[in-house]
Length: 115
Image 1 (tube, rainbow, N blue to C red):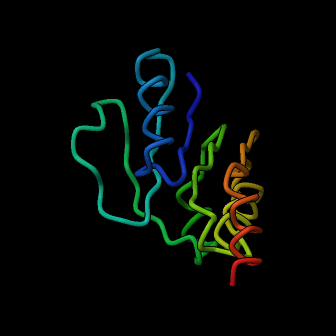
Image 2: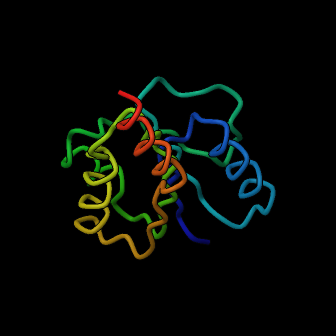
């Protein structure tokens, strides 16, 4: 069993991945979110509220995690500081694999031009 952390776990895309991982019954999963824990995420899913601006908080949340799947919403975080902090914390916590939230990047650039 691999311990997987899903960052930005309260979003719709993350929910699809979470459902697929839970269905395999092969991994331990930690759902990281800025807000209060969700109901009915599954018995095998742990939940942790994190502050993406606090690297120490993130390091503690990621201790023992093998893989981080990031679904952090980057559209409103133009400098993507939340994800940068998550990456730094993952390195410090010894995470082996990190999948970033790159799906929102083009829209972020488009928003800059629309202003």
